[in-house]
Length: 392
Image (cartoon, rainbow, N blue to C red; front, side):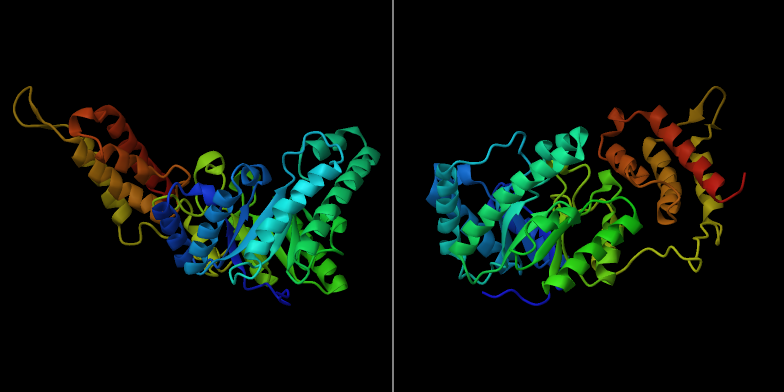
């Protein structure tokens, strides 16, 4: 298998085989990827797990990759991982022999499969505690440790190359500064990007492009997108689209340890941020002077929504010392009128959508709802409508 000259068509996600508890879950998750026109998956492997049960481990991966292929996704397996290097000692020859047996067994079994896109030798070899603590010591210490790990990376590249001389090979580096350690050995130059502002994100792209032009090699961004690092998926996709660069977003499903800052869809197929999904289809938010601000009260619905809340909260006497009780359903209906204006016109933050609170209350039996809290919420939503639509 020879590397393609261009990987700009790749629209990938990081998604590990163990994320799906069973085949039904795996196929459901992959159906979401298929609907999003995702065409490749990148996943981590583990040598120790393989050594405990070689046939069982590779059988699991075979099922995973063939299922991905059935849903239109190629595979980029990552053989080794550099993230958990805390202290570093040059591996022994015995360890390298173990690594070679592991890599040879996997590659010989799968190298002729149509779903293999390329081998990722090692993920982020310079992104670990060993390198991060060096920064606090001195530049000289950082470069010394970098050279140690560079030697390690190049040895692993040699193992993979000898296992598949004709195959396509890469290294997924944390940032473009680390590409220098393996650019001459790989077929595709792969970088990751979790930078926080547009000019830095584009600068990294330009560095990668320059490497690609000088070496005559294609480039890929094989990890990006993190709301907890001020690295919006929408911004990354916009810039990668403009530069015609393929990508792998981290990651497909929002769950587990990374669920609060990563992911495109939830396990049930719902989403957290529609702008990410729109960006996957080439639609980006208008940030120019030509954008049109929503006029929530153009037809008077803001007035009517506020009045609905006021009516729901108003005490209506029927006879002396008696009043007609309003149900929490009445109050929630009025609150929803306001919330739908606020959310549709993007007048409220959506990281904790007000409509989600309404749905939670509605899922509870009437007798378990806190009427006081629901009333307070409805009042707050009405006040937000009045504030944003500029009326009292």
